[in-house]
Length: 91
Image (cartoon, rainbow, N blue to C red; front, side, top):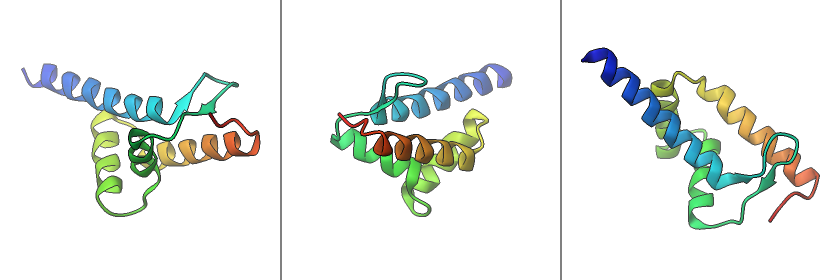
């Protein structure tokens, strides 16, 4: 049962992270846009960008459960965001 639970927890964590990415961005590789800024967008942005506090702790926990390097995830999101801003890719 432990392995099944571990797989389930990992899939849940991946889903939480994917939802946050979907709240932030639209499009796909090579054609990313910053999504409209809603409350969900702001929460997802804080989830990925805060360096301390509750959002940072939450990111660390979910990334750990998903088996994802949380700092690499944070840096990737920031780079994608900066790239979208530079290219005027904002909805």
